[in-house]
Length: 192
Length: 296
Image (cartoon, chains in turn red, green):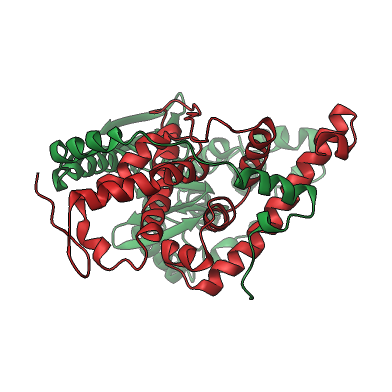
């Protein structure tokens, strides 16, 4: 197989892509699971790197390969989510949640519950704000990297994040309140 | 907007602590061998533009089916025609020919309804109306919508709530309506119930009283709507006293009654007879004018 990957200073080999894969595949898969929880994150991850292998020239202009990879992942997740919604609408796809293990095995019970609560809170947030929130707050990308990944100005990133934070925290507060009412426990007892 | 710090770095509220907790989850490691599978898949799987062809074809087919099969409107209900029991009509090439009787377009329809009578041609769409062939004409009553009425070179649109009789009854000159005759004196004092019998009895004679009685008898029958009896009385008068004193008056009353009854052909004959029998009568010009109107 011939690959014509090039960076700015030297030709890029398949090993370069492999190193990219080894470095970022895990966090990309986790991000994909958070961005498109109803889809198979493993499939989406493969799609992301298939794009890399098919369009190596795109990497030439990328300031940050990591940000570029996250950008591809975000677009792919959005596209596949839309397609899945259309397929479900026409009854071509069963509506089932695919739970792929994307978190480390050492995840604690608290982390699992927190992950579920945040995922539920994110369901009510618009896709643009959700993408910024997931990349910045959960995946740990910098504001600049989020701007590069989403192809938007940095100020827009902060604006989206500001609103996303407010909506997510409000949703989480509501969840905690409801849990407290139904369980009869105080908030501190639920979430010490 | 100032740069923001991740919530995880300074979580204060319960909600923020949940976010921080979720952010702290490390990702599960990916098997590096999966990359080799990925490369193999990339080598084998090279999607081309042809993948879009079936999608576009399917979309075009669905679009065509929707455009062609989507009902734009409900199928129009057939127009319902109801003919009276005494009606004589036939239908051919979408045209209903009504010879006699009454025909009702009971249910409006989007298709054009064409009705031909001996006097007019009617054409309508989305309308309800009643057409009836009456004496020397066609009567049209439009209940809903509008009907185009054609007769010769004349075209008229009859709208809902209007009624028309074609050909129209010609206007009768006022001079012809003012006929007078001496009353049958012997019956003038008879009670109303026996007034008619009195006139019949009086008409049996052969004097002027008999002519007056016949004239008055015809007028009485005419007033009471008994057309045939009225005409019978005046016909008897003309047969028995063709040159009697009252024959011009009888002829005129008979002519007027025939016109009012829309028996136009008989009225024309009556007018011609008057012109022949009464060439010196001052109302001759009016009779001629009426006959000319009847011819139209």
